[in-house]
Length: 312
Ligand SMILES: C[S@@+](CC[C@H](N)C(=O)[O-])C[C@H]1O[C@@H](n2cnc3c(N)ncnc32)[C@H](O)[C@@H]1O
Image (cartoon, rainbow, N blue to C red; front, top):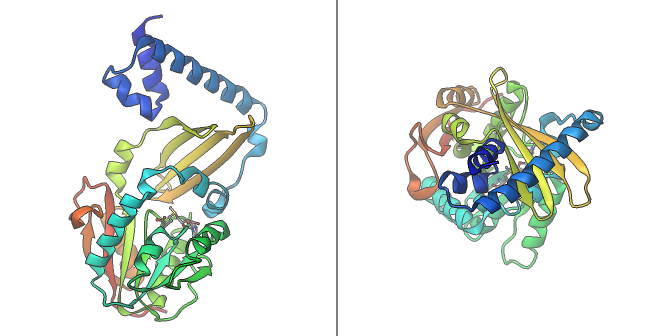
């Protein structure tokens, strides 16, 4: 078998870290062969397993609950996009864009383990809300000996238990569009509206739909510690949502399966939804870096909106 065969094999099976190296012809033939054999073995393994029973273990993952409860934190631990550098950049962006006085009240909606909240708490009065107990537990530990206080709430984002309390609400890192029915995603925006003071601000940090679809690989392997994870990315046109399926072979050889989805929005789609919930868009940004203005090619679609009216 020649080198080209293995190159195209690897390109097709798409291991992102090798994908670019193969393209640049920056790896040796023996390494290519070694990796190709590994990938082939895993694919066969998975195929056999899928014939005998993965279907029986199918998880019906409604509203992403199972994924965020059991997997999100584990799988995103080494994700650079959640690292300190990016978080600091996000926080500088939030401060610049909101221009709020000291001690203003901010709700970090879907706060996760609190990476933004903790940095913002030196200056503002922060409340963090998330549905995930484990994430909130880590958050609590991280602020144990800090001088500031953060109010932590375990709740669903559709049911924010505050009325006209906040000067701003943050929804960072694609934490919106987690419900199959649009009426539920609208319910989230309405709930944000109710929790905000009149003229209060919302930052909604979304993926930019079209460039994201072009960039994302349809299928690739990831290695996390001693676990192998097969990620399958799909865009469901009918439902207007990104769907990600994960098959995990853990370090004990067990096969586990999970999935999540995120609704995708163009500017006009999200604008409609925001207007229905009483918001007007003030400005759109393409990343948190240097407060870049949004273009169709931007990595993100970050919306700064304002509560213009009260809703029922
Ligand atoms: C992509 S993470 C982002 C976390 C955080 N904003 C960050 O940037 O690190 C999405 C978060 O939304 C939370 N979440 C998912 N569904 C939720 C729901 N229905 N209500 C509240 N939080 C939810 C998850 O537990 C998770 O922490």
